Image (tube, rainbow, N blue to C red; front, side, top):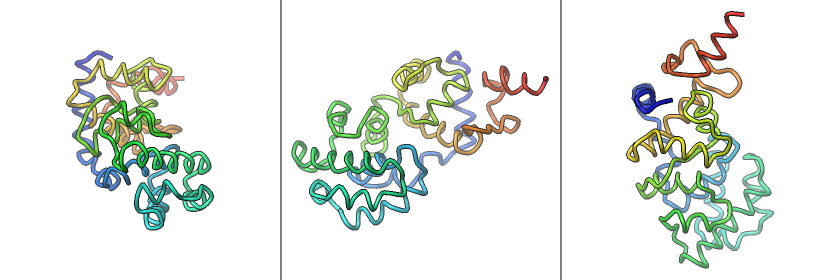
Length: 218
């Protein structure tokens, strides 16, 4: 995909999902946003919403979570899946915040990446939504799938896809692009059954032309 086409795709998605980035987790304080973002890996927002209130009621601060029993955290977050790993990351990240950052979520990529359970995706989300900083593009499962399906990237890893997207889009669009692709991936360009006939960007989509229409002709 060239930059001119990428610009058209961005504009159309922006018109289709004008409130894409306006979700509750993005309005949380940085510490809660960090924990919720870690919890959100490979699960739904609904699952995270079910447990986050209870988690923060029991452990409202980094200090409280840093001293939490792993088993108690696991019990609370169990519905989100992968709860053993997530509990270790949550407690470990909280302990690191307390020990190295005075209980304050740092606002640089380098420092965020030192926290257990925080990779570039999570760091980019926190930097953009909590601090208004754009240091990269958050590539979650939706962004990864859509970037390859639409034809924005040939990358086989999240880092490669991020580099391809950065090459296509100006910095001022990086944060919003993630939100738009996530919204599109949840509503139309779903993993198992993309709704290609009603997709507002199908004319620019590689999958639509090379796979969907080809299958229909058979």
